[in-house]
Image (cartoon, rainbow, N blue to C red; front, side, top):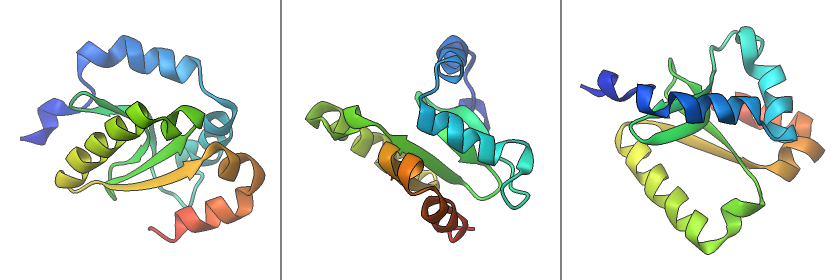
Length: 118
């Protein structure tokens, strides 16, 4: 049943825009995750499920990696993130969140921590 909700064509332009306008932390992490470079695990970038777009998604493991910028700490964004997380968790998807600061300034720890989820 869920298959029809993956990568909706309605979100194609938005996903493409997000891929073309990545933040520095997203660029760094994608360089580490793409082409199964991270322990042979397949990740997809800016992947959509229903109306939500996931920064990085490992479909085999149903793990979603989100990079939180400053806007994620604002009240309205936090509320949206909580709703999105609850919905995706109900689909069996586990979320792993890192801040921009963790990705850029504590890279070795962040990559090690990510690996512990697999």
